[in-house]
Image 1 (cartoon, rainbow over the protein chains, first blue to last red):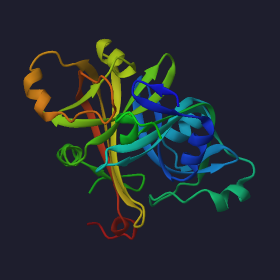
Image 2 (tube, each protein chain N blue to C red; image 1 turned 30 degrees about the vertical axis):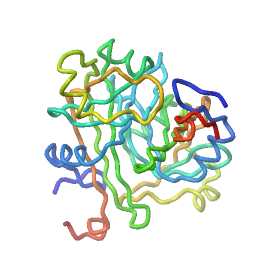
Image 3 (cartoon, chains in turn green, red; image 1 turned 120 degrees about the vertical axis):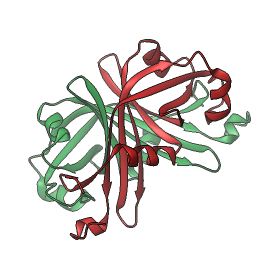
Length: 140
Length: 140
């Protein structure tokens, strides 16, 4: 088991499995020189993170082919256990193959027009796990 | 009620109240030119977001007085309702008043040394709310 500052490191396969089991993630982009973090409902399609958006910051990031961060985490607030997966990749609009994506990518929870599809193709992926067994010196 | 692209906008008082009711948030910083998002356990102390860290990226951001993003959200996966609060501010290490902070700021869930205290003093704060009543045209 690989460990980084007390956190168990997850391999890429484990990260993809965890990403596939959730649907709420967060995109980290820059607005001018300021960092922002925005929640999105996503799906994994052919190994890419795909979500819907309107005409705001996330679409702009995609049209500019910006490098963005994408994070998903899960926490058990009672046990103080949890994991997080961080993806870094270029955001781009999906303009082809829209029929296939339409059935796979969840609708945005937000009312109003959210018709643009954005894809993040993972370039870097890392995951970290916290569990009590490890803290107590018993590796799972 | 203020609305932005189908999302109800929250005022600063509502944002602070929501931040005060949670303990897991996410810090958005840059590592070189790459954006990253890292989960932390935090407290609100005198209006600032305070969390513990080790000697990694978050401490470096604080020592460099970097402008960082901080996000907290809450989602009801069944009702498709939720909210998110985004804070932008300068990260800095807390070196004075450590006794007071020691009792207030939660221990990191991670094993190992996490003894440095970091504070984000909010410069910008915004919050967004999704609820079904609003989507159906009935403002709460």
